[in-house]
Image 1 (cartoon, helix red, strand yellow):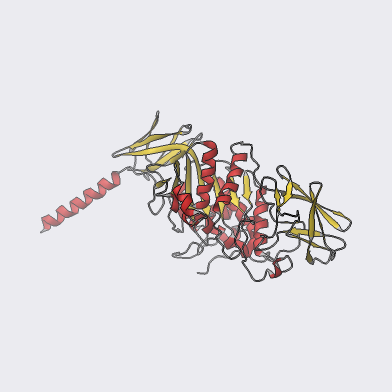
Image 2 (tube, one colour):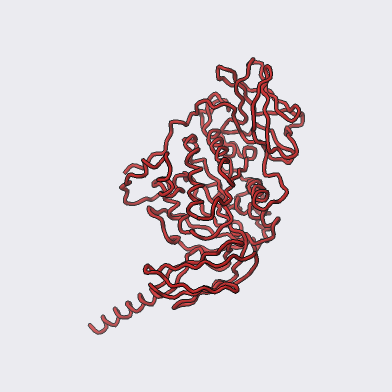
Length: 489
């Protein structure tokens, strides 16, 4: 009996030792993956301490020794777009990945409107049937949380091609963005989809990012004293740790982002937290100021205190949109305005085609130097002429237009020194917008589309892109006092 016991224990020990000898790759690496073109390619993984690992890709071959913790990494030279290729990793065991492409890789992240799948979008059946894009591939990161940064994803996944069998489960915004890029560039497109519905931006910022910020450093320097977490918003950095950090340092072209709904009640602080997240990701990836394009919140009848759908009752969503607009001060950022394609009573608008396209034109113009207009009119300046306010715009494409059969502009409000806003008449005159109301003799401020449900506005450029919401005043915001706080122990 004792001999049998020792035989079993010996077999188990041999099995453990055999398993420990295996060279492994991160779960992000797999058949059908897309590697970033024109940038150094990092390949990494784990092995036994001091084990020699050889990586072969196309004409490249590199050998490296695993460190004392078993971690190894090679840096391959950049490659041009193409494929399919094989990526082979040899050590005490051999692994060969098939159907590997080289193209452009984009992170797709945020909350539920990024998570929203193609099968729920407008014309879903037709979109799925027509999906014949085997060179568009998506890797979906499973939803997990962690207190500390993880070295690998917690759950397995795989790279899927954009075909009728798979595309219904793709992120709709990511797919329509990637499709627009592919149709214009004809190179493989990789989409790394890592999002979680209902999440706040603070879950996506690293602890290092928080500690670098005057807004959050004092609060985050204290130990949280929480043993375990169940939900993504229960712990700061919980999603960065589990759904972003394991992707590093996989080379990417850029990122697209759709989030903000869960931060609307503290929109004013989003002016700090959202730019902090972008800067944090850029520091973590060590790829400089890579392109980061985001979706401005669509229209939605979110809260009862937005009385009369005007400025006098206050609007948290308008303030969140303003915070998003202000984030454009960061280099290499762009925004897709979507107030015209929201749904008043559905926080998840089904028109994800236009969302993806509006993100894509930002990339096509600013990353790929294509001759396209990247968006709609942008507020530039405010002047007063008698009883009228005169608004000037920039980046207006080939000219301004009112999307109205009679040429009337809607969505404008005007206020005098008493700070009370009135619905205003507005008209296009010599390429500018004149705004006026019989109730305001001397204009002091103008607001446009300043509401949760901001679907009234109809100022566009001739390319069909809407002007974003704006205000000319800096009067106190209704969310200024709302701050992020740590979860209770």
